[in-house]
Amino acid sequence: MLSFKCFKAAAITIAGIENIRMIQKGQVIGAKNHLSGFENFVMLMAE
Image (tube, helix red, strand yellow):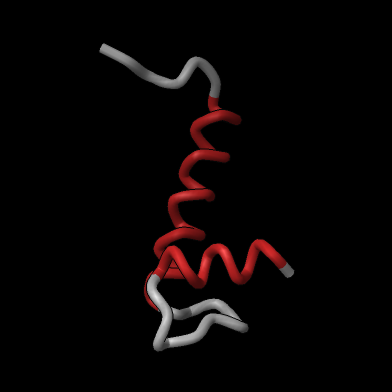
């Protein structure tokens, strides 16, 4: 069974997953509704 070796790594991973879900739902300032989740992610990371 695989698991995280420390709490910090698990917390960082969960935070990243939450950020991706927010981008997909369009809950991030600057996200465009007509773009896909991936396109929004790329646009937001380029800023």
